[in-house]
Length: 361
Image 1 (cartoon, helix red, strand yellow):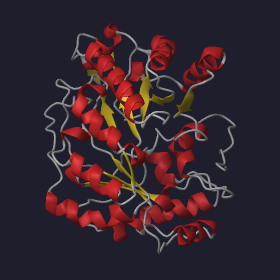
Image 2 (tube, helix red, strand yellow; image 1 turned 90 degrees about the horizontal axis):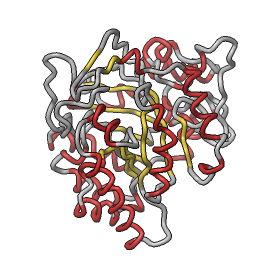
Image 3 (spheres, rainbow, N blue to C red; image 1 turned 90 degrees about the vertical axis):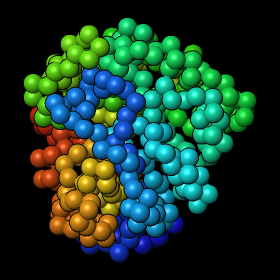
Image 4 (cartoon, rainbow, N blue to C red; image 1 turned 60 degrees about the vertical axis):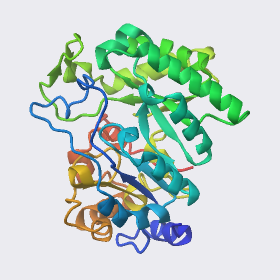
């Protein structure tokens, strides 16, 4: 496992060149997805001529296993569906046996009884998100087609099996909802639906600024225009206030991913350290099927091709070292401001007269 003492010392000293390795590693196992045609909001897969990459090869994955097994947490960042990777159960088993926390995002369509039982058996080392961006069949269909009834049935069965097999313990998943113009009216009903299934952890997300320009998709009869669906920052804050004004949702654990103090940035924070974001000291993403490295979960811009560089080279490379230097000085890094419009810190910095939020526990 990672050396926490060394890591924390390097963070407190604001070091830019690290001896410690990333304690959180995101890795892409496959580019395959089961939704066909793609979800309407999926810019990449809806691009003309897009061909989904295949699975990571066994030989390549073996090169990364030493880094995965030394990490405290590993997340799948598949641009598709992790459960379509043939070795997905072996990955869960090996990381669980090593005591490494594992996270991934999936759709409820693949949560069969067999898969649910497997995930529940390893739930102590799992923390995953289930993407459900609707509260009704009509809205579900406009974003990803048929299957709302299957989705709800699978989620209810998972919750019931979990209560039977792990009584009194928290579910290992959160329900994720991307708040868009076409489904914003169902946010409150989505929260009520989650409560009815016994789910108390919710992640409310925002559409990333993918610089999609005039991107449009009509896969399921709903004319989706990316820039029209993206809400303004004030709209997201209004949605939050609407939720918080209602007593019925007091028991829910809701993360608002557009707020730095509640987003994945918060998960990387350390007690007593007021550096705005610790991703460059703690996190690295490698996506071999797409041949890229990225420095956090919000940035989609590659910092190096994975086929040409080892993790150690990228980890202390010019871009991440520069990000550490600026963050240690309390600044939002130039690379983030240029390529990270989805980052909550960048969103905050775009607000007039808004101070940079310092994340501290």
